[in-house]
Length: 146
Image 1 (cartoon, rainbow, N blue to C red):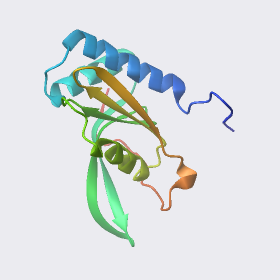
Image 2 (tube, rainbow, N blue to C red):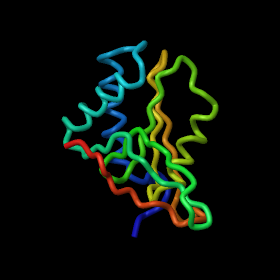
Image 3 (cartoon, helix red, strand yellow):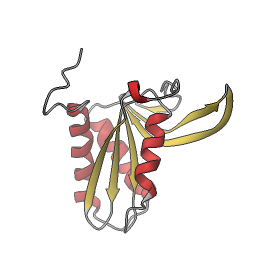
């Protein structure tokens, strides 16, 4: 059982590793590249530190037992954390909703939104499974990097 006391963060060690990799990429490349450049560099950095990375992971969305659509997640790391990358000057207001949607669609609880903007910023989102109103899709990486 997890200790949910004061100061507790779910997946703290793993998210710290991902955030550290994010800052290494940002400090090396700086600002101004397109999202796919940062994604490729971040994937390389995460693999270098021994993490399992699934890039462009598709998750099916169902309603009333029928598949409605699919959503594409930028990354799933160690089958435990959703990572969404943005490389815009200003972070869109919908970015938080997008990451929460990804968490609600999966059995994962932790999401990181990494903003490769004029200033490097990260946002940590938590969506506990016990608050999800439907059976989330499990993450089973089909296209995982090694």
